Every structure is written in structure tokens, then in C-alpha cells.
Length: 447
Image (cartoon, rainbow, N blue to C red; front, side, top):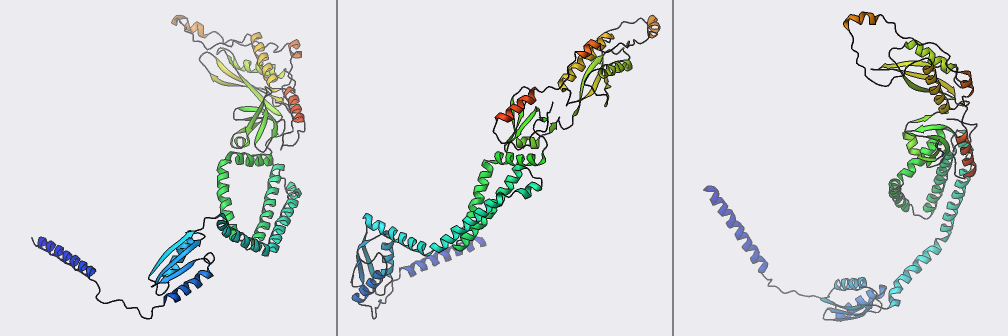
């Protein structure tokens, strides 16, 4: 109850204050505004005329003053001068009102007059600054020539062991830096150093935009610089990148060109080569091949291994050191998996030919020795318990040691290095004028 009375009293006070404020606003002053020593109309007109004569574009304005009311007539160049004259006239002492009857000039000559005047000012300023302009241009030209001269002196970077692409990139940076110094000196002479910050800001924004737009091109270029510096391969090397293989033809600033064993050109982006696992089969002239053979579980594995090793030792192109090896991989349900390994010299022996002939000769030797290479089958044996002891007494079958390879067969084996791709690669290098950042091959390479 008490709170209700307080609320009513508060509302009543607010209403009274509003009524009092409205009464104050409606009250009119009883005293008159007296003007003492007010300027005469002629004095106001003379003062405004002097002002318009001093402002360009208001020289032809007609001014009349009657009882403190200013009337201006005539034509002005633009609306800005019209508004400025009204503001100036209203600030004069003794002015009661301003009647602005000015009209904008629509003639072409009047419109061109300000622009002509501005051009004359710029021309005059340019003539005054002509010696500084010539000196600034001379500074830019001198530093540009100095940068070009330094960019051709790449012997120092060559001595550091940098590649041609890395050297060219470094020389371009040197030229850019020297030329930029000349431009900064020219701007300092012209007292336009504030323009440098604006140029740097614009260059930064443009650089970010170009970086996003040409990201792949920049990545491939920088990857080409790294590849040409590290030299992970040379012309003619047989390499593998991911699942792509071929002989290296050339390295460009954007991609690496390979010639596959089918004679096709394969282009791989440099950035992919940098970020992917790569195998170079040519750096080490010795290379090992391997293949798996399945033999029966009833055979003597020691004799199987000796037969395979002796067969490979009699084969042309197989190195005696490291010697061939035979490893037993696993025991299956119906066969034992055996892995045969041997080494060759890629400079004299073709890898694919040697592996093919090794598989053929091992199979021939196993067939001649009666070694069974079973298919994955399942057999069900029904054994009588009474005869189990007699069956267990049977010896394990052995492999008769027979000559692994017939002499006539050995003479017909061809494992010589295949130079078909090498010849096509040489022809490609002679015919194509595309840039190549790799040094020339020192000799024939094989796969």
C-alpha cells in the first residue's frame, strides 16, 4: 500500500515538471531587439564586393543591399562557389537575410577554365622541378645499369656450388634490390617519401594476391631450384616417383621430364618430386632382383636351395659376389614359398632380361630334377591306424642333383644391357631446344 502511494506521488511530480517546462517555452520576451550603430547598406555592399573581387570565380557577381537584405546575381563556375558566397554574406555584420540568385555557368569554356588553370599550375610546378626530375631519373637509370652489371657477375655464386637456376634466381634478387635502392633515392630527391609507404602497401597486397593465384607455379619453381642444387639425379638416370618410373630427360623450372620404358614422355611437377619418395636405380650400378617359387612340402629344402644357387651361378650376367641367395619365406598348406635373390651389374647386364632368364632357368632346373611346384590345393588322406607305423618309416623324398643348365642353353642366354631407351633419349636431347637444368650425361645408363 505504501509503495502504491509513493508511485502515485512520483508520477504527479513528473507531470508538474512537464507543465512548467512547456510554460517556459511558450513565454515570449517582452523586451525589443535594439540595433545600435548598424552598418549602412552601402558599407555592407562595399565590404562584400571587396570580398568577391578577391575570390577567383566571383569577380562578375552583382551585389545589392536593401535594409540589410543582400541580393546577389550573376553566374558562377560551380555550386560550391554559390554556397560559399551565401555563407560569407550571412556572416557580415548588419545582414538580415541573403537572397542568392546566382546561376551555374553551363558553357564549355567556363567548365574548362578551372581545369586549364590547374593544368597551368601543374605545368609551372613541373618546370620548376625539372632539374630534380632529371636527377631522379638519372639515379634510377644508374642503379638499374649497376644492377644489370652485377646480375651478370655470377662467378661468386658459381664458386659456392649453386646450380644455374639458383644462381639466376640470386642474380635477379640482386638486380631487384639495387634497382629498388635507386627508386628510393629518386623519391627522396622529389620529396615523395610518403609515396614509398603507399607503394609498399600496394606491393604487399599485390604480392599476396599473386601468391595465391600462382601458388603452384611458385612451388614448382622453388622445388626446381632445390632439385638443381641437390642434384638427386642426372640425365639418363632411371628413377621412380610414387608409382611412376622412367629415365630422366631434363629438369626445367616447372617440371621434370621422364621417358618411360614404353618411350613416352612423362612430366612430373617439381613440387611432387620434392614431397614424394623417390628411388634412383642408377646411382648404384649393382642391383638385386628377386622372385618367389613354391615347392612341395615333401622336398628336402636344403637340396632345393643348393640347386637354385648352382643354377644362378652358371648363368651369364649373375655376379659371384655378392653371391646368389635362396631364402625360405613361409610354410603354406600345400607348398613352401622360396625366394631367390641374385645381383647384377646394370652397366653390363639388363635388369629385366636377367630376371626373366633366371626365372626360366630355375624352373627348367627344377623340372629336370623332378621338383614339384604344386598349385594351392587341399588333400584329404584316409590313413589306417594299423599301417601308420609302416607309413612313418618311409624316407622323405630327396632331390637328385643334376646339371642345372645345359651348355647349349647357356650360350643362347642374352642378358646384355638394352640401349633402346638410351638412344631415344639422346635423340630427344639433340632435337629439343627446351631448357635443361641438369648437366650432360657422362655415360650410358641402364635400367
